[in-house]
Amino acid sequence: MIDPHNSTVEYLLKETATRVEKYASSGNESARADALNQCLKLTRALEKPKDAVLKLSLSPVLFVAVKIGHNLGIFQILVKSGPATAKEMAAAQNADLALVDRILRTLASIGYVQERGAELYAPSPLSYELTQRATIGMMDSLFREWQPAITRGPEFLQITGYQNPEDPWAGPFQQAYETKDAVWEWLEKRPEELARFNPFMEGVRENRQHWVDWFPMQEQVLNGSSGSYDQPLLIDLGGGRGHDIAYFAARFPDVPGRLILEDISPVIDDTQKLDPKIERFKHDLLTPQPINGARVYYMKWVLHDWSDEKCRVILGHIAAAMKKGYSKLLIEEFVLPNTDAQLLPIMFDMMVMVAGPGMERTRSQWTKLLKSSGLEVKNFWVPNGDSSGFIEVELA
Image 1 (cartoon, rainbow, N blue to C red):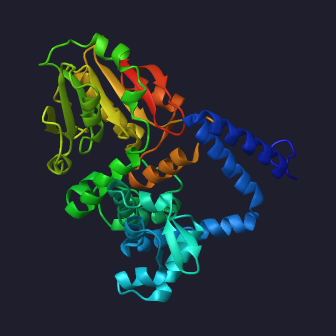
Image 2: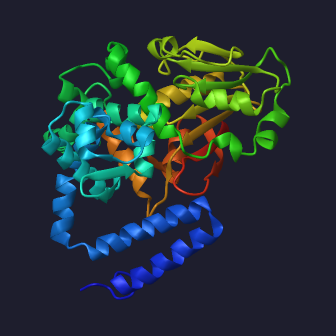
Image 3: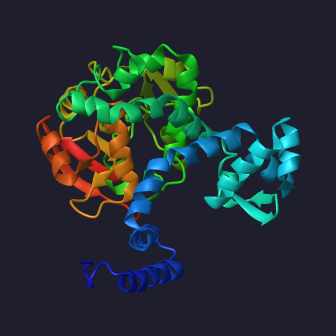
């Protein structure tokens, strides 16, 4: 029996209206995420259970349709030229009209294009998003490199007796690609795949509030720094092509201290445009940290790629380089609540489980992991909405 106090459509409809109105009046990011989560609950209550399972099982075909739509240039055509017919878009690629019409019909049903009449389509907000380089890279990398590993997840877990994956050299990814390389080793050997992966990381990081815009940088970091131009101020560990440290440099152009980007060799070599004052350093996180005594060691979405065992190796190297009473480790990751977690962080948890194998962690799991590495959590900073959390850490 459906619980009338928290599960009926009537109750959920009222709750949804209340939370949507709260977001409409405040524009608050937390209110937006809360309203979205409530809308999903209402949708689930309205959906017949059998239909919900069927649609979930068929949902990969929607990703396929979006990918085909991108390959056909549908989003670019609509964004650049405005409304167009299926026939016009088919002619642009010399494609079969019946096929293009089927793809457009699918895209319209999930809001990726808008229908304006029989076989006439216009761009939607999602059409515009799918003309952005980082978003395209994110989609391409997930479709081509990560979907095979995701689909092998159930089989791998069954074979291993449903043990939490912990070995970066033996997981669903390795089974899918018949390789003994860890994900990062595999990417290093494949420039084409790495070239898709780097924009993917930039894409998932975009459109979220940057930590320097809400974290009390002046009070927590800059006020206690050495003030020397020769000393390391901020080291971005595993920072990709420097998206985050470049933003920091732009926000604090006159702050004294060295800014250093670290990542593996192929990523650093692929970093094309970067503020000249940001130093580039090739480094593997599983090896000792070569730069000692920085004011801040910063990692974004790094540790969620690794098991606790490997995280302790990474954290141990960082702790050995930190200066007690001065250095801070700032970790930007999702901090999962004990109940009612948002959908996006949970999807990432499943993703890194098959690709890392890693995991998203709760507050208590983070505290335990860091304590076991000789570190102490000073504060959890959790912004509004479904953005990453921020963990401020010092030597114990």
